[in-house]
Amino acid sequence: MRPGGTRPLTSGSQESTRWSLGKVCRWTYSLVLGLALTALLALTATGLAGALWPDLDLVNHFRPFLFAAALAGILGALFAMPSWRSPLAVLGAVSLVVQGAFLLPTYAARASYAAAVEGQPLSLVTLNLHYINPDMGPTVDYLRRVEPDFVFLQEVAPAALAQLHDGLSDLLPHGVHCVERRYCNLAILSRTPLTGASASYLGWRAKPVATDLALGNWRLAVDELPDRERAAAGLSVAADLGGPQPLRLLNVHLTWPYPAAMQRRQFRWVADRAADLPEGPRVLAGDFNATPWSYGLSGFDASVAMERITRGQYSWPTESRFPMPLVPIDQVYISAELALREVVRGPYVGSDHYPIEAHLVLPARASQE
Image (cartoon, rainbow, N blue to C red):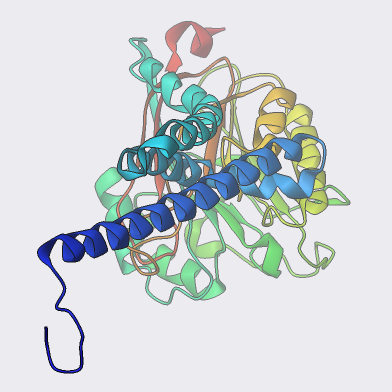
């Protein structure tokens, strides 16, 4: 016995203390994991409630992250206390199945990308330039490499138009735009002449804008559109491809998904704009600020007589803001007269969005009808 009458700890009591500490840590880990998986399940249910309360649809834009969290939770359950493993795994599995039900249709549809259709090839790029992006050099270089037939641009600053003119006037000599107001900074560039252009602001009023101009002759559409806070904008034109029907192009930019009422109203407006386009081949593209697994965009898919061909191409934000893009919010739709070959995400060009490239075909029968 040591002086003072205290007994030294035996090896058995030391092992018991370590075992008790390990048990407490494991119990704490199991409790924290259980709370996290319960919160994940609550978020999952909140997203489902977005079908009834549109503002809750905001959760659904982050379904891939909820899927990853559920998968991590299931794997984490393997290290929980034995009596907790099955309940924790069930919690994670329920969330995983729900997220998968939202995500699977988007990725399963990629199997139909390679369309073996003969006809006139067409390519387009849609890109949000970002208002404050001062240098269009990387964008010009990228577009010269890709050589698209059409370019849909959003958030176009007047200074950007001058740089695009300097670098692309030989490749894309035709264009229209409504670059003046914050929510009508749209432009469409084209290899072929454009006719019948019109711009509108959330459907309240439509005004014709200058069209069929050489790129260097673009002019600002001053005071043609009402100035509305958080409004959406649309720019439509027709391109002559040499067939009996021109190709109709509609470029749009919608607001953020919250508050939902504003964006839902814009979805209805875009659907009406698309329905107003004459019969024939049509392309709708732009920054929708909505993901494929949201009720908002899926509802729009059901209301517009066109097919969304962007299937989970993550486009925002770019490496300038985050190491990897988090959400696929730039979308492309085509009508039944067109066939799809491939949709890919382009490289970083200085914006906070990545460009989206769509490679299409106008089938020979459609171009002759």
